[in-house]
Amino acid sequence: MGITAADVKKLRDISGAGMMDCKKALNETNGDIDAAVDFLRKKGLGAASKKAGRIAAEGVVVSVSEGNKGVVLEVNAETDFVSKNDQFVGFVNAVAKLIMDKNPADVAALLASDFDGDLTVEQALSQLIATIGENMSIRRFDRVEVSGTAAAYVHGAGKIGVLVGIDGDVDAGLARGVAMHVAAANPKFISRDDVDAATVERERAVLSERAIASGKPEAIVDKIVAGQLSKFYSEICLLEQDFVMDTDQKVGKALGDAKVVSMSRFGLGEGIEKKEEDFAAEVAAQIQGS
Image 1 (cartoon, rainbow, N blue to C red):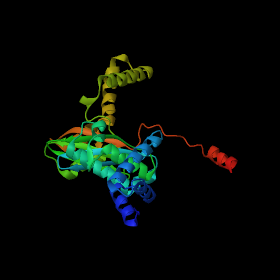
Image 2: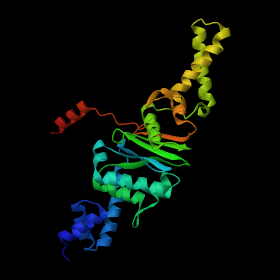
Image 3: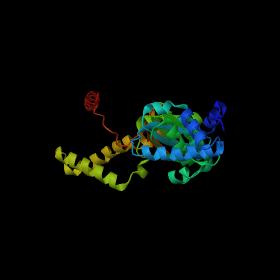
């Protein structure tokens, strides 16, 4: 049977694949739309596997909240251009909503979750990889549900995403301000009670040796170290940092009786070893190949 432009458009609307891929799928399946969708799904999985070795350290971090629930999610791609692609952005937002609603246990459970029709999240991602032509991955997410307020903040068009869970009565504007503070100050812990003993002892040893080496009497070294440890806590603990929205008070004081129970800060691509491009070698190779 003849394949019409309307058939190709219909398949493209369903699958999100390119026009030429849709036309080929319809030719291969004698115009059967359902069979063509399966054909593209299989092709998408194959295309995804070929691209899986490519480094994906760009993409986007999104953070959203609804009342007492919130999600922060990182989805990676190979280039920054993809973060502005409408299909990619739509997929990421849909995945964030799925996490909010379904609360999957981890990334593996998320990938196996139903996404759209008979597609899983993993299959939908594979189709997107085939359509856009870049390797992509859902790297990580956090979801919180608290008795008070979940505050979300995204900085730098998806370069940093923050999600803070606060129990107790807290103004939504203040909660968002705390999330913005986390983005700016990057605290490692919520309070000094959360700092592990090994970290504290390592810092104490360094400060003690420094005080002794500077000639301070041993009798006052412990007192000096205690004071310097307080400064150390104020640098790494959220509640003891000067609030960026009001530097005359600490974050903990600004919150009053409300309590921060969770804090997540995702920096896009942090910890991913990016490929170093040697542009001189690339130009030389092009010249030699011409």
